[in-house]
Amino acid sequence: MFVPLHDNTILKIIRFQFVTGLIVLINVALFVYTHHIVGAQGEGSLATSFGFIPAVIMDHARLDPSLHRVPEEATLITYMFLHAGWMHLIANMLFLWVFADNVEDSFGHLGFALFYLICGIAAAYAHAFAAPQSQAPLIGASGAVSGVMASYMILFPRARVWVLLFMKLPLRISALWALVGWFAFQLGSAFFVAQEGDVIVAWWAHIGGFIAGLAITFALLKVFRARFAGG
Image (cartoon, rainbow, N blue to C red; front, side, top):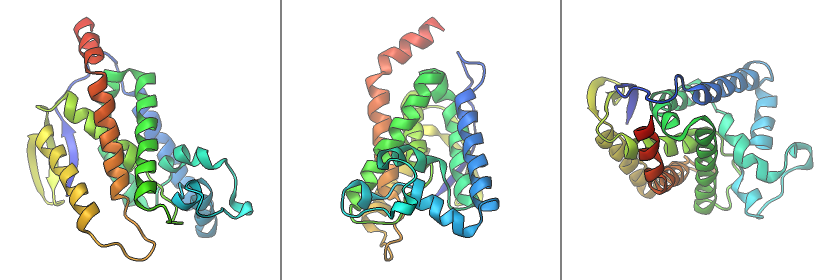
């Protein structure tokens, strides 16, 4: 739908988005390791071992013991740091980099790290409830990033964001319109875009992460206002 390029919201409290930067570095490092060091066969087993599999979490299937490398519950976190290809990785990291710095500024470093993980966990469960029988591993940061986008929308609705619309048309629009439009696209896709076989685009993971981000940010609005008033 659109690709964010830059926003005009400056940091007010933190000097640099260290947690955001660390998340990006971990994702890139793991991608290079899984795609260019382990190899194709190992890559598939890593995705199955560390990806989030709804059927396993919902007790509809059992993972092959040879692939059981971490507790099933741990995949609620590990799945967020694996990606299927360069475009998958770049898109998620670009959205994260554009929107996360100011959200990290609002939450603080540790608070943002916790917020990010909670949104990713909520996204995984939303995906599991939508497709409880799926044995395809869910991987990618998009659910957690969706929560970051929701938080940015609430905290900085009037911020101006440069985006590439349909990958061609550069526009400078408000964050509110851009992110409401993005969420509407996810909802429409979840209900009306057909799935093929067991290949499931994680629309509900995006929706679940976004809703979690909204709920947490609304709950903490007074804290953020006090934080910025004091900063």
